[in-house]
Length: 84
Image (cartoon, rainbow, N blue to C red; front, side, top):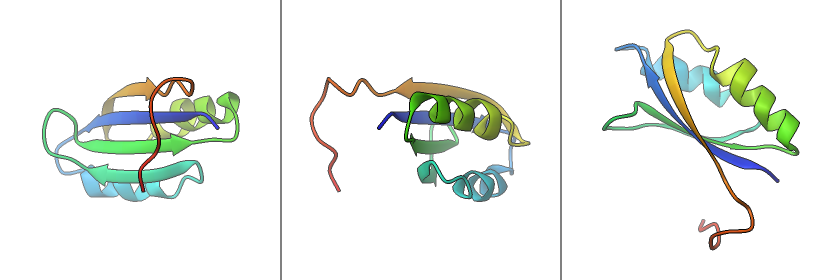
């Protein structure tokens, strides 16, 4: 199951609206406001790479108020385990 982490920057004051919109997407497993360089953190898990790409490119990146994103795609063969 492909996983990606997206770091989002947005216009000042639009964070809560953006979080609400992104949270509605079915492939989004976590979305949180953050302090620091980026405004919002998003975790996406999809059934396949095509679905993940669509969610990121055509859904998340087109939410009004988002000014930039950084996408980190997980290398499934590297790393440890997911801690819950």
